[in-house]
Length: 285
Image: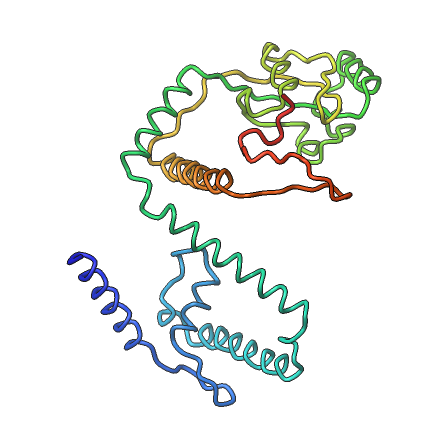
């Protein structure tokens, strides 16, 4: 109890200092614009934590930022005069935004401080053990709609056409066609089953026969094989901490689902089974 009281007093003290440092920067039609509001606007223009101190930039930049705040206040005033805030669509969006903000803050509170450095280090050690002997390949692919077209393109490549040129001209994969079908390096589990198995069965510089996947028909060429590069702890720790936070949140949400009373209906009002187990969603088994 004593520790909680000390923490509460420290928080009140911090808030008091922040409020004492705040002051009115502008008055717009007799409405105050405070230094705290200006600071929030300024920081919102940069990635988190990277904004320079507002008072260190030149006066022209500061006044441009203030002009933006003034403009927003003036336009908002006109919108309120026309009762836009009473519009049903606006009220619905405000309610939705409010729900999302509450949800985000609540979920953040469930993971804040919950993942220790020791847990992240243990996760990294498991991550390294799993990757130690894992292979990755660099490959290109050509994606087309039919087996017939895929076979015709394989013949072109066998007749001497460069794989990259054929990919640029014929591949239907918008993400890789302009790069000659280049997929970069990947591990087998990163691709759909049919593609991954076929690609990892190929030797370097070997071109596959047509391979069918849920996306269409592929022709695959492997360009390199190597052991997976293991990132350092410092490079991986943020992503691993996020993974542990997601696991914790998923576990919490799953508990809520299991304890909930859910009744599911089809379009005719008939009750149908509902699967609460998120781990099984999308499974065909």
